[in-house]
Length: 203
Image (tube, rainbow, N blue to C red; front, side, top):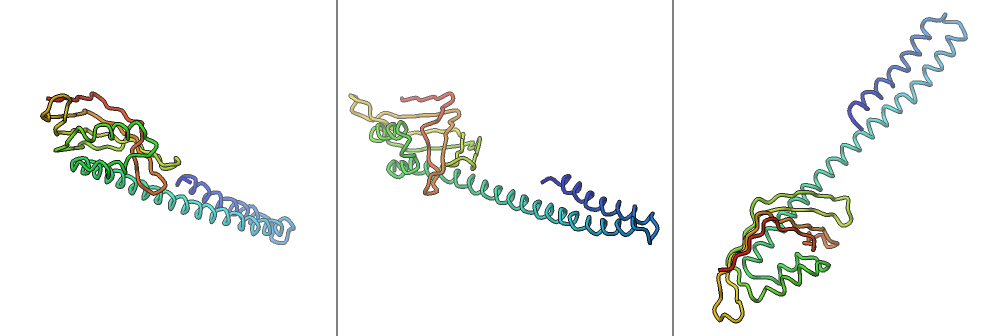
């Protein structure tokens, strides 16, 4: 309920009894109309102030709910950013088993891609910069977020049949990932992602 609605209800709650009282005050005190007007005045006070009380309570409930939603959103954003930083750290340490914990079991293509390349690539540095949460919907089940960032991976790669390892570099101008908060409370990467201006380069 907006402040304008609350003020409007307050004006109605005050105006109706006041109008009745003004009408009553114009009539002779001993007239039946005066007596009836006094009864109507008292009767009008009860629903008017009940309406005002309900409006105030409703306003407080909505304000409390808005604060709770804002708190949940702040926590979700912090969790998502923490998840991304943890994944970057694990990839930098070549700990792909732990990194896979942040990839959904339903993301078969992403998991297959990691499993296929984990033994060929030895990461020396992984970075994610310019992190942004493009969208966040906590009303979905499960809750969903789309994040974007610049990603780069430097290391070495084994390429058959060349015996020695070759320098390896993958850079993306912008990487978009979809994450969902699963039943255990962890935000995990889904199969839906997009790389903008991907620039893989093996030297």
